Image (cartoon, rainbow, N blue to C red; front, side, top):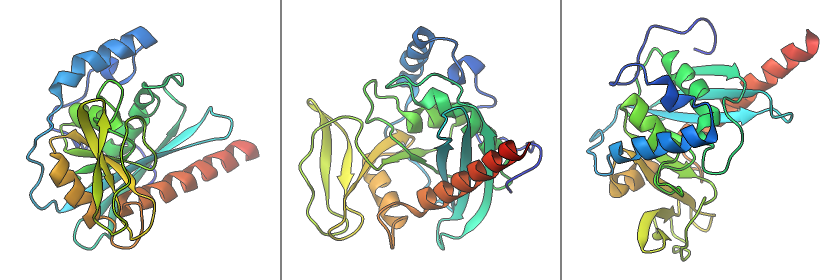
Length: 246
């Protein structure tokens, strides 16, 4: 589903989130939100033992920076076929501030989630969770406000040090920030650049690693990310074309 009015489907278990937790009015308020919600992050789980549905979330931005398209695709966890999808087109909800990037995207992503008719059992974000300067990246934030298990899978690291994992698929190395392990550098394809996996919510790092490998049977990036990326880019292109024609 990629158009129409929002459905009356709440994907989370916590009800509508506090608006201030999603769209703060200032940098100081955003920092306070992260500090307040961070203790709520569940880094152990358990997540779903064998999730039936897995959602990918991604956002595309216009070159001007004043428009975005957020997409959610829900995949059958066994076949990796897309069984539902939704988009939300709008404007970034917050200024670009390092470490507060999630606030730009949260309202649009939550709107897209609420347009779904199939409830996902796991969220896979194109971004980070615990591997964040304040240990509260997008995957953590989405997990806390929706109540759904969440994983962050980044193409590049936001922070940390690591040694390259072995070249074989499934090899990994710890991603460290000082003395703390905040994620894993995971090789999803033989000899191809790794991805950066971190826990978001209700998920252990071991389980997150297993889930990401299950979602990467052919390519470096999870199928959840690939399908959501295509959808948000297409939605943004359509919105830009409509704006030019009006």
